[in-house]
Length: 88
Image 1 (spheres, rainbow, N blue to C red):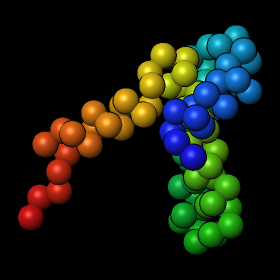
Image 2: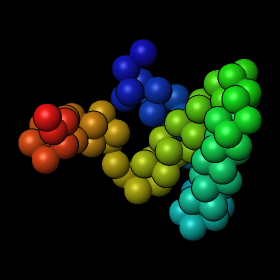
Image 3: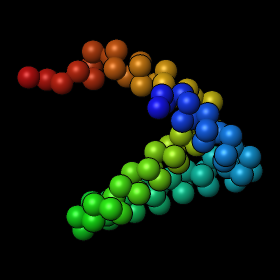
């Protein structure tokens, strides 16, 4: 699945609720999910980590939608940036 298609699905499902909650409270939810992912990684819980990776991605796309950022463009720009290339 392309990033843009996934971002559109997230927008269709969650944008109304998330925009009513507002960017700041939505960002707090995102941070909570990152914390849950960190806990799953720390405990080595592979199944929970898998679920939390998805949660983090969905909340990240939600934040991008609220800020009108097309993640496919953001990732493409990131990959073109020479400062982001691995060093030897």
